[in-house]
Image (cartoon, rainbow, N blue to C red; front, side, top):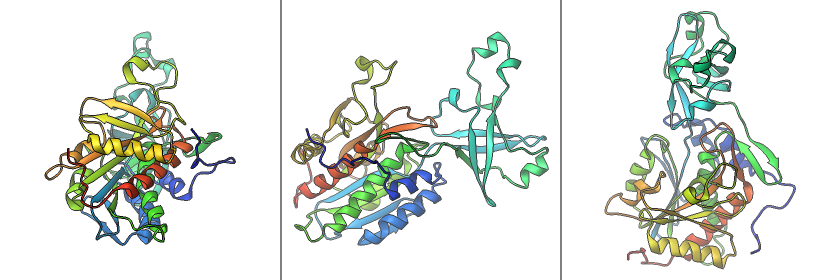
Amino acid sequence: MPNRTAPTPPYSVPPFLAELLASRSPSGYETEAQAVFDRYVQPAADTYAKDALGNRLATLNPGGDPVLMLAGHLDELGLIITYINEKGFLYFDTIGGHDRTVISGRRVRIQTAQGTIPGVTGKRAIHLMSEEDRRKVPERHEMWIDIGVRSKEEALARVQIGDVATYDHELELINGSVAAARAFDNKVGAYAVGETLRRLAAEKDRAPLAAKVVSVGTVQEEVGVRGATTASYAAAPHIAVAIDVGHATDHPDCDNRKYGEFRLGGGPILCRGSNINPKVFARLRAAAQQAQIPYQIEADPRPTGTDARAVQIARSGVATGLVSIPLRYMHTPSEMVDLTDVEHTVALLVAFARSLEKNDYAHW
């Protein structure tokens, strides 16, 4: 199947996506990502709104029918400073679901009132551990952040309780269209919903769009899909699609019998299951087939770990779909995606939005 919308070498990262990836936005601290979304998406929208949680709601064709909501979350994992000891070492709690085996020995950037400062996550060196301790995963309270100071007073002059940190692992093209970055989860989803609206807005000279499209950069997904919960009430959609990342299972030590078979470069993953409206799934698949966009299919028997689970049961219920971008090494400092999958996801969403017809709300 030809990849008509895939980027061609030399590969490059779209500036909108690159700036989202460079922004630092742990759940509840999404300011930098919000600013990028504002800068790129607001000029293309007919109306643009911000809410009390920090969601960004960009609307195109406000008089359209049905109402289509696209949701991609702006937040990422992070660390939050909870205690500073007498020697100036910073102790932290985790924001979102961290793998404790990969926290220590990382460079981090801490967002403070004076700006961003560097630090290093530390723990006791392996040379100073007993054989038993070496086999253990360190508990959170057994790790800290070192900012190179000598006292609590010196640390408090730079950092405050409640400041947040993110890993200092930035975007890099690894090979061709394959790239690694700190927070592809879920800057690619936020990019996809914003870029879809931008492209639809640029195509206004084409056949009129039936649907009202609301592209939402949601917040606090990593701590309980909180932004999507409130944004669904504000947007009041008939149909919605959540865009997130999904597990690419094409690496060693991943049993496809347990987790399914998904690969980088294989196209967006379309979900089926109890969280998914069957008509929305069918139309996403039909849109992909008509536009000759490669896709993969995932089966999930329960509410998914995405914004889709909140959107589906908002108000009186929303016909909801889920599109996932394949990703390796989820919730680690170096997540990996294929940029062709990102571009195919945007192309699919544009085609899906254009396929919707008036008074069709995907009831079944």
